[in-house]
Length: 126
Image (cartoon, rainbow, N blue to C red):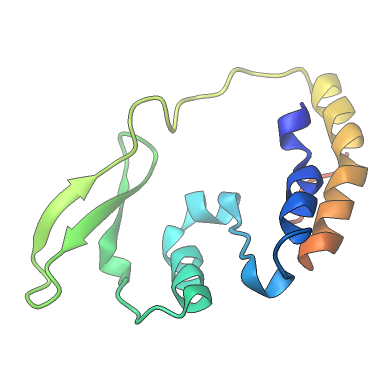
């Protein structure tokens, strides 16, 4: 449970780096649609935009997006990459009362994390 108290980690990074040098990616949004999240990373890093929506495709078998490498000049596909089989697996069912207790436990930690990064990720509280 301790590894999911993100405010502990971000505080250590904020002790060393100013907030302007830290970019937090929304992992839930990355799973739903990786393109906007990774475009934000490109902008944050000041990189020349190279990603295109065509670099991503939804793999219905795995249930999530995979990476399609494209030749920059021809836009022809050069390779495909999906995360290994340990990713995208089904999670076991968890009793609702346990989920509720976990949400209550994490709520103050999540609020602190939101304040530290200046962003609300909307994680459920009940």
